[in-house]
Length: 112
Image (cartoon, rainbow, N blue to C red; front, side, top):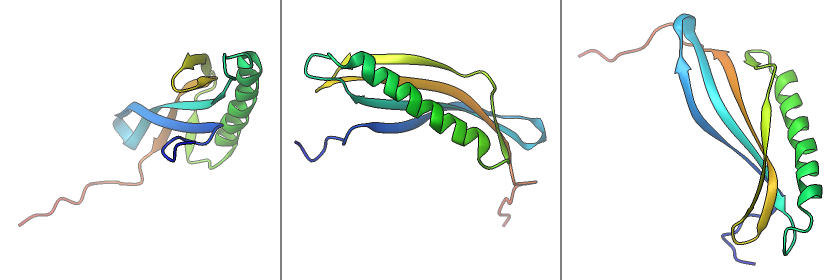
């Protein structure tokens, strides 16, 4: 195995975009990925996707019931992923919005 390859299964996220709204509200659009190898010829794709749905759902539920200074939207959709990179990979991608309130009430602008 090459040293620069990730160990599977793997989970990661990406902040796609967001907004800074009136009243210090901040909204982040975040993608979560849960992937695993699915066999030499993707023969375990169905099982891997099923496992990753379960893992992803557990993580989303932890996020929803965690700290209370943010809100996670009620309805979250996911997409199944199946592709060949260096290996056959399968899994799930969740995209959701996380809304929070900024702690800052003003900005500290250095003045000369």
